[in-house]
Image 1 (spheres, rainbow, N blue to C red):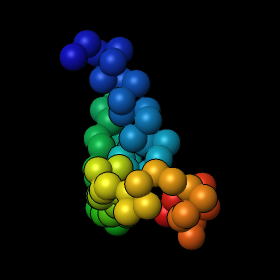
Image 2: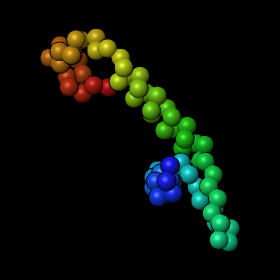
Image 3: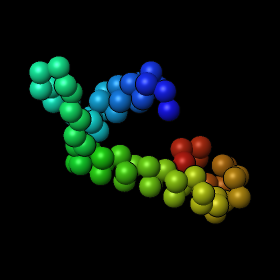
Image 4: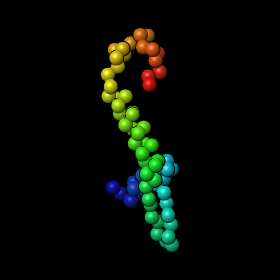
Length: 71
């Protein structure tokens, strides 16, 4: 991975609160915010669970109680 690509990934992870920055002189150290990481992990796990689960109403939204608001 190139340095610019790594910098962009770090920027995104900082913006969503997974990485925390700690500056010491000219150096920057990063730590993982485990609480935020756990929250996102739960969200991603739920997303994958729903994404790969077959629709019990055969994708017929008029029969579905969620009515185009899949949960």
